[in-house]
Amino acid sequence: MQTNLKVKRQDPEANGSQPHFQEYSIDIHPDSTILDALIYVREEVDGTLALRCSCRASICGSCGMKVNGRARLVCKTRVADLAPEGEQLTVEPMGNQRVIKDLVVTLDTFFDQIKRVEPYMKPDKEPESGEFIASNESMTNLLTAMNCIMCGCCVSDCTVLEVDDNFIGPAALAKAWRFTEDPRDDQRDQRLKTLNDEDGGIWDCTRCMQCVEVCPKDVAPMDRIMELRDAAIEAGNRDTHGYHHTESFYNSVKKNGRLDESRLALDSAGWTSIPRLLDLVPVGLKAMMKGKLPPLFPHKAEDKQKIRDVYEKVEGERE
Ligand code: SF4
Ligand code: SF4
Ligand code: FES
Image (cartoon, rainbow, N blue to C red; front, side, top):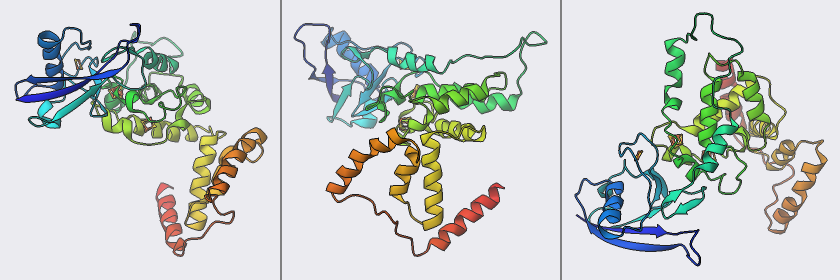
């Protein structure tokens, strides 16, 4: 089968080297994975192409790359599934991480994020019987998160990390969830408090779903982050902009049947937080000049009673 690969080449340590794309037209078996194709290029066509892989069985997590703009494990993705005979595949290094050469990135940022959540058990005392006993149910609950192979695909495509490198990131937060849910750990409350308070913590995720879509092991990091938010609120951690934002959203839709965007911004900043309120002034002025300032008195939905009925039903069921 004829395949055209367009591979991003770069060597940041070489003087004068600029990122550019190089095309390779190769003949491969129809069942080949993208990793097979790249290895073929390296072994038979161009020995200077740098890529990283190990297990070739979606276990080790070392072959994450962007293919046609989306992070994937290339050992798990067949060429024919993305590019039928003759079509082109674009392969680039993962995003949000520093490139060492061609398709190889350093995972330093990724592991620094993981370290921030202290990814190890912190029991208060030694086990009485020589080992910690955990129920089967509690371990089954952790299975999905424990499937993480630390490939970095979710971090590569996280839309918040693209603009804010202080965000802890989806992989680390999924790892944090794993320890808050483990009955053998005794620091759940402290972990939740830290993740809730920390700049770059659980409230910085914008719920874009990208990490859920690209994760090759169905860890669904965003779902874990939402569970961390719920757990943090239930544990009494409510003094954050993120929580105020959520609460304001909830109350204004309940009251008006629509979102009151002016109030949302003020509630999220905090009515007594002068510096944060001042931060809103330039944004407000810009919105006003573009005619996009939300109305000070929100429109009310005509059928707001129906929305209230939904709220009451859900709240009743919760109780
Ligand atoms: S859902 Fe949140 S953590 Fe996941 S990619 Fe989007 S912003 Fe990042
Ligand atoms: S959560 Fe999924 S995408 Fe992210 S590092 Fe783990 S396995 Fe990879
Ligand atoms: S080579 Fe190990 S996950 Fe792809």
